[in-house]
Length: 401
Image (cartoon, rainbow, N blue to C red; front, side, top):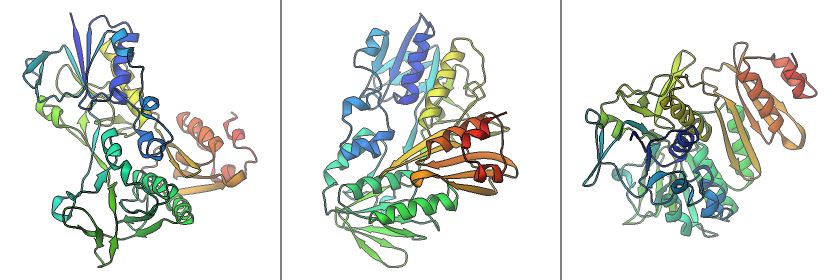
């Protein structure tokens, strides 16, 4: 009987095996994950779960008996240690598993600070998996002092949670401004003001020299000589695609596991989807770290394993929750040369990214209408003028033919 093996039991892996079985795949399906928890949502980890507003059972993507009912072998707490793509086998400890099609949904790995500058001290955490967050939850005590390294969305979300729980928060960003890699200055300004209004100290253009402490972290020393006393540290300096198994299999890499438009890697019978995969997009190649992409791409790969032979067309969208602000992002702002801003009712604010006359993306802060309209415009290849965006009494008018 034919056998599809999926390695990586996260959002993409779960979506892929579910789609395979729903699409009528009659053979064996095995989903392998290193974590002991069944597939779960990651975004709430640094938000509602860390705040204590969401329990573990609400994180889980499927009921406990779902996989067994669908005849999907779920193998948790197991690490694949070898791939032989010529023999089409995987090694798990002393066991060898044969596959007909292998899909890598291995996700990404948080970057850590080097041990040489204190990254290995007790009390230094990253935010990626359930185990990471469970390990740090006891640190979130009112009055505790936390230093957050990195002013991207993960760092800012952690800062928001810490502030809401009554901690003293200092966020250190090496770049001239927070969110510099992913957003326009107008969006950075919005979130800087939001965090400062909640008592977060934000240091921009501030390099980390090293973390201090004997065994456990006690302070962060910046490159300007300032030392910031702390009880623990959260590191949010980005992620790297998890490509170790792809390398074992001999797959080509390019900012992740290089795939074609259908999700195939350079090695026969090996596919990839989700955070770990880079794929063709609008004449270039991208890798997306988002729940939406993980699900959509994984489902397209499942369909292609079933014979659809259809190219994946990404429709990028993202979100972030900080305090009472919900940020929704549609599109990709790479290559923008100017922005247009719009203020709505009750503090709603949106930033519209353009390259010349072409609308690329929208950041919508507490403005679901701007997000919805922007997403539909971008996906429809339509670009209103800057004046139309700023002057429209109702943004929905921009959707009219």
